Image (tube, rainbow, N blue to C red; front, top):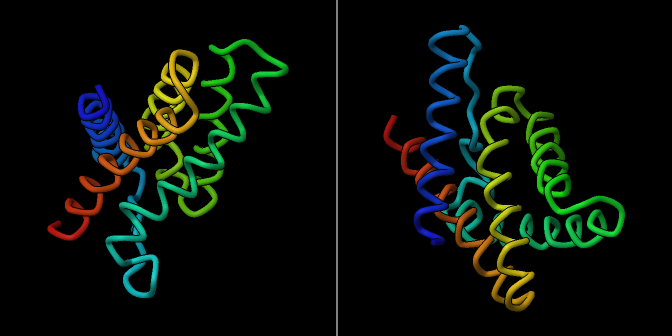
Length: 140
């Protein structure tokens, strides 16, 4: 389930990116810094997703007190899109579907199992997406 969700997130992001860059004509942006600590693979694939998944879980826990679960996942994806869009508008658009999937995975597993398993599943999906993004970025 996690691997499939990670691949769906990656493919959807690539399709959205290709559409906006090649069809609409939006200028792409560098998703990863060229140097510094954030350019290291462990930051992009392990530490970044862990921190963002922790924030995502807190956001979902808070928001689920006020709105139903379908709206929570949508609000979460919009929140992360806006946050990533501050760096590059296209990046914000591209990450919407992957974060929607991430939120849904977290909520699905959290309802049925435990916080720990939900956290690990959502983080794994995010890490898979970031792994493929990082590899594509390195070899383009």
